[in-house]
Length: 163
Image 1 (tube, rainbow, N blue to C red):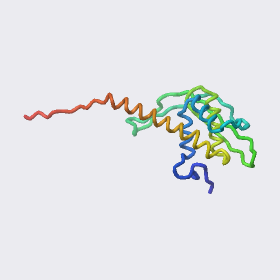
Image 2 (image 1 turned 30 degrees about the vertical axis):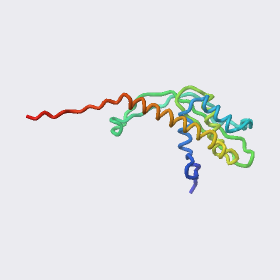
Image 3 (image 1 turned 90 degrees about the vertical axis):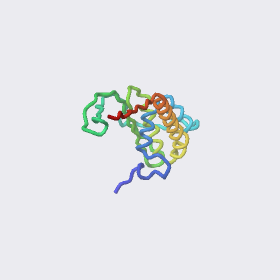
Image 4 (image 1 turned 120 degrees about the vertical axis):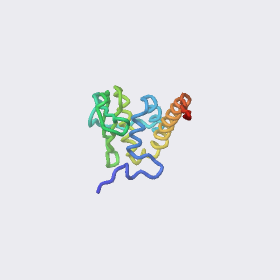
């Protein structure tokens, strides 16, 4: 039985699925800044492309009422990339990135971050200086949107009329 990074993540640290979601929701400038901070002056490791960044379409599906029958909502533009770090200590990590939009550099940075998160030499620094700040930024943005929505909430009530 094979194990993945998703099942090996220590408690409290994001699994691979969670960090891929964080990277997919983060703008390029934020990924680049956090990656530079995490690498702390270390040059970017060399890598080989398994799939150079390419742009395509993906079908977005919705559900009636959020939980009912599925239907095709429409197509969105996505960019994806896959790379392999050149092995310096035996095992080469493969990084994958997929996000909505047409930004090839963002896909490259996200795939590189994914690969570094799977590399023991970089893993701790990447969790501390890349994922934690990016996850906090996403949570802050979500809380701000929820507060804006809550400010516009209207309470409706009906008075029963006695007959």
